[in-house]
Length: 153
Image (cartoon, rainbow, N blue to C red):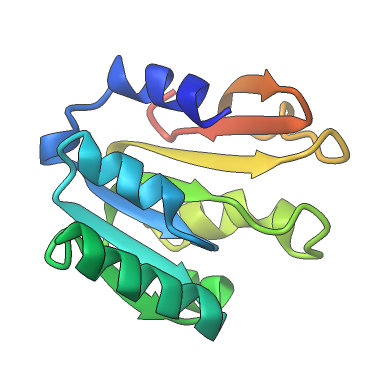
């Protein structure tokens, strides 16, 4: 699933110039992939200390401390409080999270995306975003579904 996603992203974004937000960052695997492709500005958000500790350790091991900024916070609170804008936002909440369906609206209501930016929300087939006004693409890889959103269509 990650390889397929990065094939799409590589054809759209110049990783060396974009600012990325990883919500519900978990182990940070998306972030390491972004940095390995030249991304220099990734903000990782997670509230779970073991995940944050793992990402801190991995950043040091890979010598990429400057490229990934760690924020220990609840993703929903971060969305409502940050004043930053991002070119790409990737959100991979637990599929059963009760707030999952609110994420696209919250991101756009809080103006987190740059003008041509994308939000990519990972979920399973129990959620469907195809009727969302800013939805523009769905990619399915096994049980993983990526829904793509953008204000620029």
